[in-house]
Length: 134
Image (cartoon, rainbow, N blue to C red; front, side):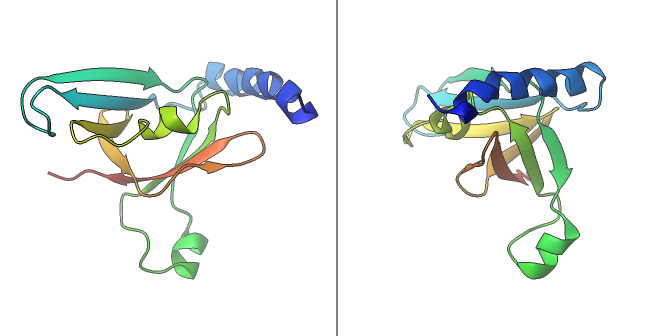
């Protein structure tokens, strides 16, 4: 084990304090939906939810990043940071893609999809999400 590995639970505890003060008001959930009909929308849906705890930081894509990487981002995109490294990439992405499965991120009641693979940082995961429109 590395020092970073030893410090991760302490970092998570510190993030819980921020959550306890109500400074991170969004409940963020990763929902894996498996369809009995073999493809999304076909048959009965079975949901498996993972509520991200401690609550991560949810923000709009910073203007500086939108400017530097013009055209990559859309209105409504969200950056979710400070996700505990106790989660695996498989938990954040829904695991191996399957034809009968889809993964939706919920921020409150709004639905989002991953734009790219989660980024692993020193003490956190970061994801870029795009709102699902009807």
